[in-house]
Amino acid sequence: MLFYRKKPDIVDEGPSSERGSRGKSPYATVLKIIGLTVLALFVIITGFNTVYILQEDEYAVIRTFGATHVVEQPGIQFKIPYLQEMRKVSKAAKQFAVGYDLESGETIARESFMITEDYNFVNVDFYFEYQITDPVKYFYASDNPEEIVKNLAQSYIRDTVGTHSVDDVLTTGKYEIQSLVKSQLQERLEKEDLGITVTNAVIQDAEVPTAEVAAAFKNVEDAKQGMETAINNANADANTRIPKANADADKIIKDAQAQKESLIAEAEGQAARFNSLYTEYINYPLITKQRMFYETMEEVLPGMKIYITDGTTQTLLPLDDFSSVTVDNSGQTSSGASQNSTDGSTTQNEGGTDNE
Image 1 (cartoon, rainbow, N blue to C red):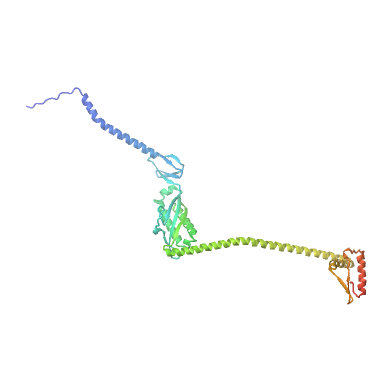
Image 2 (tube, rainbow, N blue to C red; image 1 turned 180 degrees about the vertical axis):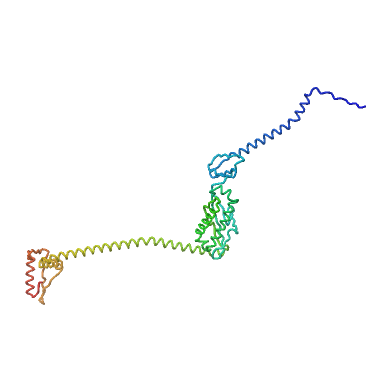
């Protein structure tokens, strides 16, 4: 015979319910904490994806479902979280080197070792500066734009150095090589449309691989510098002497021109005087002859001494000044000098001398 004992009915369920509620509360609390933490993280991440700060020297490229636009205004900016992608890039100039490490300065032989037009070896180090002018093209036109720019720069450096002699590369042709490399590289970048502009290209160093050849080229460069110094000194001396010679030549020309004008004026004056005398001579020939005679005597006689001799004795003949002689229209003299002249003429006529 089977016997079973019936469990008594539990009337007071208070303690049992309290135990059940106490058993469930720790799990609910943990779940609640985890939920709040996830929610806080979500809010924080959403906030970081909504607000960003743009500096003055930065671009921000916002991409929304494939469409892009550039933000340049500095300050606090906003974007739609999880739907818009934001990438920043600096506006400042960036640098890279070919032939050496920009940070350590160590030579990279595979980049710097080149062959010149005259089949000489040379190590050339280049320094470049560039700026990002179109950030959209910079981010999305290529995977690694800096590497592309450096590879293109190496190619154009080798091509340009290969068309110049080693003497040009080491001495006088550096500026031309730099300019050619920069212009060719920039033209290629514009064709590739990478959003990058090369602002500077400089030969940092150029030398031959061996010490002996380097010493020889140093001597050549020193000689060329000496030649340039001598040429500059000669040019400076020429610049000093040529203006002085030009000034002297100009003075000689002006003096000759003045003398020429003076002689012409004097000749014209004498010609005019002769013409006036000839006109007077045509009208009054006798009076004109006498006047010309007296004027000539006024110039000649004051410096003359006349001696009359009979072979044994000498007598000084005094001559009066002819400056006081006047001639009237009839040709007659009106001064004592005329009488003395007449007496002298008579005396000379008696002596067999012709007055005229």
